[in-house]
Length: 291
Image (cartoon, rainbow, N blue to C red; front, side, top):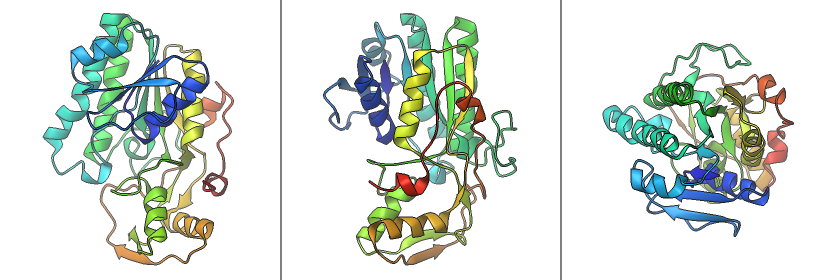
């Protein structure tokens, strides 16, 4: 297995697959971190570089694509640059898979950005796609390219539309990763930035539940499958902040700011399709906060 992208999620997928018996190669950016575990190899390089991809994908039987260069809140600032930076690597990866005869892949998409604010709740995989950020548009475009190449070249692909992922190793700075950013702010005695009234609701999935799903699905790929990966529940952002504060024994304070145009008011996924394929019982967010 090759894991392209060695950030928060990619590291956990690589570790989970390695501990489950896969031979794993991971690709980090040039400033990539050292491996978390001794059961996989980490290379550095650019996922759009054919030479790098040829090295990583030679002899590989499955690719997990977890790479990305932009966050939803910033994606509209430089859309032309983001198109090249995000679609270039996935197209290069698909072409490299064709060269090396790689039979299957997993692509980590974003449920919170591809469905749009008018989606029903819980949202099934066949709901219309109406992204409201460049980030979401690029995820939809990547999904379409994967489907195109899979049908043209006969490989299998799982497109996983992930809820908000949290857990050990989650980013603690930036604009993505509510729980990690909240935990760091509270631990430092700083107010938590709250966009809007905090009533927007999100579906949260623990990173190890996601990594386990990736590994189990990769054992038996079949055709092109689009699958939601979340908890099937939703929590208000303000309630999540209060849960995090309770878990570390502090009282939260807030830095209130206007709502962002790139944020959907509600994300809650229908996860029955993935549960029909593999054992998948995601943990409750209160349980998941104990790390």
